[in-house]
Image 1 (cartoon, rainbow, N blue to C red):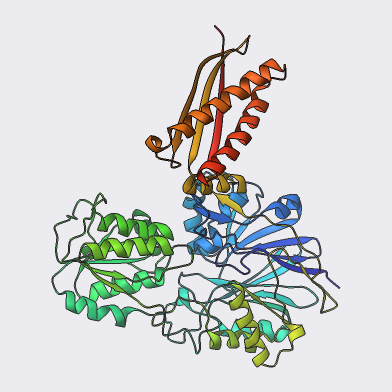
Image 2: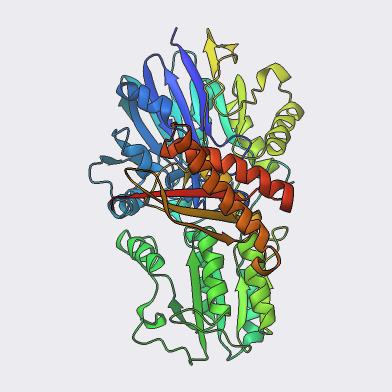
Amino acid sequence: MDRVSIFALGGLDENGKNLFVVEVNEAIFVIEAGIKYPDSEQLGVEFVIPDFTYLIENKERVQGIFITHGHDDVVAALPFLLQEVNVPVYTGALTANFLYDYLKKEGVSKFKIKKIKRTSKQNIGGVEVRTFAMTHAMPDNFGIAIKSDQGYIVYTGEYIIDYDMIQKEYQCDLNELSEIGKKGVLALLCESLGADQSGHTAPRHRIAHLIEPIFESAQEGRILISAYRQSLFRIIEIIDVCKKYNRKIYFHDKELRNMLGLLEEMGYYKVPREMQLSDRQFSDDLEDVVVLISGGGKNLFRTMTNIASQEDERVHFRSSDTIIMASPIVSGTEMEANKMENEIYKENGKLYSLSPKSVLSMHPSIEDLKMMLYLFKPRYYLPIKGEYRHLIANANLAVSMGYRPDQIVILDNGQIARFENKALASVADHLKLEDTLIDGKANWDVTGVVLKDREILSTDGAMIIGIVVDFKSKEIIGGPDVQTRGLIYLKDAEYIIKTAGDMMEHCVINAVKEKRYDNLEVRAEAREKISRYLMKETGKRPMVLPVIMEVNL
């Protein structure tokens, strides 16, 4: 029988950074390549991507990368992966069109994108791969079923069950799901973020009925409304409400305009031209207008903060504005969201935040998850995507439907589930993974040492001690010069500055006298001695940076 292995390089016990791997014999299939936003202690880090080491070491076996939709948590790490593992990317029509521009913008020059239908069947690397249509916040979303003679390995992607969905590009194909289930499913990988929410997610994902009363009360005043750029279903709801109330709309975000342009080109949705205000037509003093502010992750809240602080180039907040936060706060953006709210309230703004309890994101709740178990009838159930409490809630749901605990597999990132003869054979093997921290878009890994340095600088400050010596004789000819930042108030601690300088000078003199002078070694010795002294005197462990400049006279 086929050898089957399933594991994740990200997406387990965390929100985001999704990347799942299915191996059938020698063929490797990668599903998703996403980012997550950093924790507050990861200073200066923009986002985190998975560890690609295993895929790089086995890139000759990788048959393709499947991207189910265009959200950051499943696609934004793709440029980094393709630079190391250049294999075909299989995705839906809208996401493909989005990726052409996105990858070029991110500096990826060589890539192969293959558009696939939402419901399709193809042979890739000698393995049958089926896709099936699912409903999510972006059109053309799909799930994946990879065939083996042990049964299908099914990944549902992110989805909800919405029986009132009439737009074809959003609809779910329940018949296809049922057909795959009848042929036999070895393992079902299903997301867990909403596993503790009762009922179906639909219709609680819709917001039109909640924002219409706010539009009513705003009358002729200006409305600023924010939403995540990639939540196209919600963006379209907002535009339709603007249309209902005869409001012109100004799209603050150029990238959203481009995304809406793609929708129009594909015939999915068209914003009436007469509704839109261009940059030339928009003026900050217009009243009866809606400004739609969009972005991704932290940047959405940073933009709103800039507007509230009068620091935005195009839009300046005024107290008569009505502000609607139409997207919930996601993990890793709490600090920026709180700062934004503070700035708005300082300016006496009218802020309406849609409660995450009344407006659900488009992820499956309990009844949606039960539907997948009912249709696919898998031998094994693998909860994925979410913090550990979400994975456990998803596992308990399966138990309530009659699955035995030994049929439910909760993995850690890097833990490999191996299947033989239609049974789970082992979960003992682990890949050693290290998150890759991205510091801005130009750089790769920010190491733990760098983060530790940033933490020290933010809490205990820094001391720089410079000294100049003759290159040949090593005689001190200048300094020591001592500078501190964030450590002590100089007027109260001149003796500390003098002592630190003297210690630096003595280290150089003694090393020369004992004929053991080496620039690096003397600096290390000075750093150690001065650090101990500062700890004793101040109770702090600042970053100590000794500098010895050698000059030819």
